[in-house]
Length: 315
Image (cartoon, rainbow, N blue to C red; front, side, top):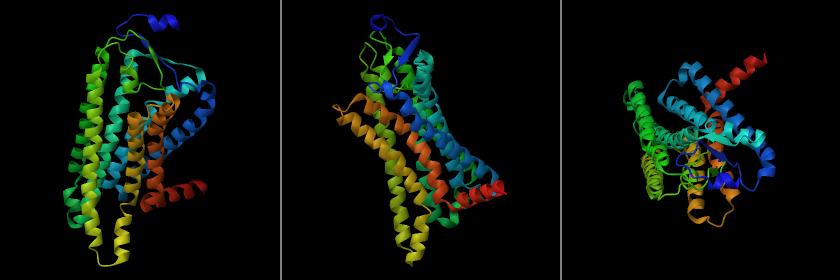
């Protein structure tokens, strides 16, 4: 290992992922909850896609955006966990340099995409509640497609400099990454160069995306709450607010881990490295697992369709 750590190279042919440093002996046990979360995420999100495709009544903007979120969550979790499990189960720690940068890009891109989809879903809720008579004429299928394309292009373009900048740096210190996947800063910190461009750009994208998206969501929900409180009866207010319940739960399940992770990176210098890595993995697994559960439990149309499918199979 010492030879590898002192070898001079610009672009190493491979990186070595260490998994969760300090918890190597527990890798197999850690893989059990990770595998369970991934299985639930895959099954749940594919179920959402299947139900929306099969049920014509669900061919509406809200469910189109939900399908986008499901696809994004599937790619996000699948881009990291199979390699992580191969480290845990088979000690397969090598990853090709280009594959590492590709993984880095996919992780960052689909995190940004998830956030953009939540903004699109809040727009749908705003139009549905504040301008219900114009909902069908405002959010037409072409408009929904354009919003979806804008979300995809925004995430793809904003994150594109990450791998290109990372490829520029000379890696002459070590090719051992103290992580279970190619997280952006975990990789560029290995460079023996001034990486302030990568670091500052990463921070800027994080603050810009999260800050702007949370701002737009907050503005939408301020208008939604004003419309709800103007309704004449308590039952009407509760029923209308209930249509936002799933979306609000998804927002919380997405942004709370994001804020916690950002605070830990900023102030958690004394936190053990293995805890940082565990939280980074949970951040990519927990939201994709929770999103289909939230919509499956709280959305009557999806719940009823799922129950019909299960009862039909039971017969």
